[in-house]
Image (cartoon, rainbow, N blue to C red):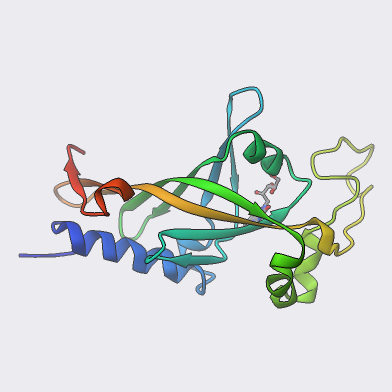
Length: 185
Ligand SMILES: Cc1cc2nc3c(=O)[nH]c(=O)nc-3n(C[C@H](O)[C@H](O)[C@H](O)COP(=O)(O)O)c2cc1C
């Protein structure tokens, strides 16, 4: 019997369906992936982000952030990114390795225009995110287009683990044209 988790092509397509759902369904676990970078001292850095766009054909994802956030400094030093999503009801883990590209300014103006006004305050916190402050609310959040930053992720590898009655694990790589390989789970 072929189901989502015992056929490589079906499993890969299914994972993409779930990822895509995250861009539109606020309740989907794929809405809030964990985004991993390599810190400037070589230690891993993890944080939650919102998945803004996803496209299977180009194997790409899109995340928005503040240009002055620590993650942007880290990506300029090392563009490698890890993405992690766990779907508890489906018992499926998705792990992604990707290379990031950062875009700001006029090339992302159209995307900025689509950011709801109330959400634009996520881009422009003063003092800049991560700065020590003397009390919890000693900061301002003006909307600042100059601080709006789009992170494009080009996926290299996707590792899927399904904890069914019998566990399955598969690796899909760009270099293999996403044909996929079963792995011991
Ligand atoms: C549910 C949730 C969604 C978030 N979405 C984003 C996001 O889309 N972009 C972003 O830069 N930070 C987002 N954050 C905040 C980050 O997790 C993180 O705290 C912030 O970006 C600073 O990270 P950095 O100092 O490592 O750059 C989100 C946090 C939560 C809890």
